[in-house]
Length: 307
Ligand code: ADP
Ligand code: MG
Image 1 (tube, helix red, strand yellow):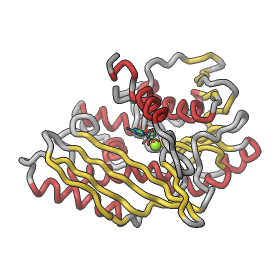
Image 2 (tube, protein in one colour):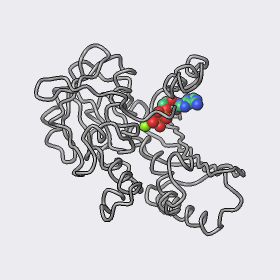
Image 3 (spheres, rainbow, N blue to C red):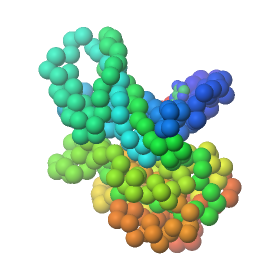
Image 4 (cartoon, rainbow, N blue to C red):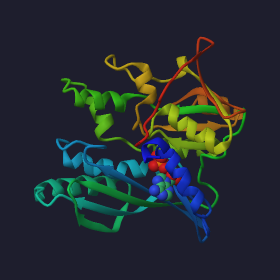
């Protein structure tokens, strides 16, 4: 059997079965691992960007530098943690202009300063194409990190911001569409949702960031928590972009918004908070049903998987 047949998430499942998460509060399976750290806890996450997969050669190196840290910041935000320390590993093609990497580093440094993150180390090697791997460590008060395996039947499901703008921006860039600067920015320079995460964390039972696509990431909450969800199509805050379909917006990745589950007794409280939209409810069983006018919408092959 080929890796492609197992799929990205099938492979992660196999890896998870082989190792024990000894000494940790939480191992493989969430946005970050959690380690005990005195009266606090440490959050650790890592993400890799690969030339030709996550970005194309023409991308502005400054923005790529920002994005390579932003995607990791988003994983710390998804657990309502505070980012602290980063490690940056670069595999570089030796013919690359030095000015390119200098611009990249400027972008990385600027976003690190914005979020009070210190770069403490990394690794540098040569390679036929560019790989950027960032590990980010954050911290939280003990027991305060919001996980994805703790959603409960009856919780309401909320999402921050809008869904599909990053994918729309990607399509606009790929197809050389004029204008659409705001959408392109959503794809090239995503903003981690710390403000919203801290605001909602006291009421949240579970949280995840939308990196693989809204439906796929809701499914991650469902699988880890052993629950299902009903999502109401008409409530989803779709991006205003006329050149891609709503199905594509649901399945395209890299929104870096947050999906949050909240106990139903806090419904009014969180509905009144700016920046959140109620999109559904947690149900028993392991399935997600997207409902449009009472009918189930069929969504096939939805979300990003690397294989
Ligand atoms: P996210 O989209 O939040 O960054 P991923 O989908 O990349 O998370 O990964 C899901 C979970 O699987 C995470 O907990 C991650 O740490 C873990 N994981 C992914 N790849 C590996 C691997 N090669 N070895 C161990 N754990 C992995
Ligand atoms: Mg994540």
